[in-house]
Image (cartoon, rainbow, N blue to C red; front, side, top):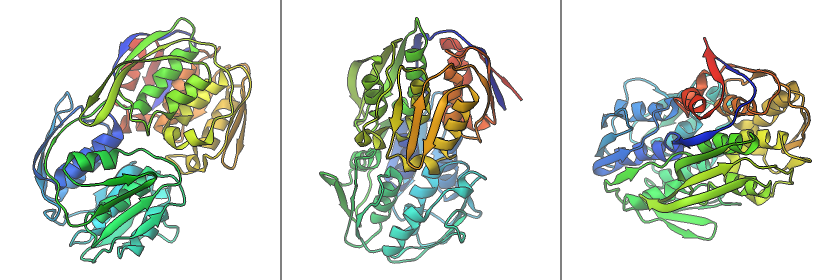
Length: 434
């Protein structure tokens, strides 16, 4: 699939982007392992989250939905009620599914093999398999430490005290989920704060999780009790519209019901440091997660040195932020973001290649990028199947001087089904081919 985006336009009105992907994944996982029936609304019906849902169905969990408006009913089987699937669990493009499920599957009584698409099959898994092995898990991967993964069942797990070498919510979550099945206490210490949806949701299911500064711990052997979950809109998906409205003159856009978990709001903080005109309105709490409407009006952005403490809080939003930097006055410098090189693509290199193709001076570094704005013309972008690359360059067309053609866009459906239609409604001149 190609996106063909004509230059010009601005964003107006009110939009609501799909549900939070991180919370949607976790709602299926914990709802399946809870005692009782869990009701979910606002579930993201993207391919990534549907992979998680199908995996638990294949392990004997009765899941109704999702309906057209994201209603899902999960009839939980308890922590020890899953059954061995008859086939491999296909995680598609979802690194979240693969890494979090590595922890959960380590505590089961049966073997399970997890596969993924070509992109996921290249992504590193040692960051979870090595600490899980120290808990007693047995996980077989390729010689490069990549999927497919074969998780051996029937292993006695032991809690560990693990200091993470990198800030990664996926690693933290995988270990905490394995800790549900481990003897004793499992604790994880983060070098920097990362999204805390797993901790919040475990507490919502009645499981005690203790957070002391940057250390999170829980005791194994408890139980999860079914609950009700209202999934807020995903701030990572909202980020494309925040950047689009910031760079396109005459824009005035309200993005509704956005999750503003403080471990996820780095994109707001960074855009404000660049001079963006963002208002957080109607703040409230829904199902233990803070939610608000975000009003964005166009502004003259300034290039900045991005503070490293904000990097883990905006790790998925950097492709969009690179577009903001390309239209700012002055240089933007990002450091401390090595994690971007092992996402669905090498997002540092792929974004740099795309920016250069459009006439922008972008210099990748081992842990970041230096962007000097120039004449953003347009051109052909290779997204390498990365949904966030594709959506970021679609928004760039609002300020481009020539059309932007973006190749390999089918994976946008992994996180943002309906992106093209919503973007067009808001004011982007976009269409698909193929």
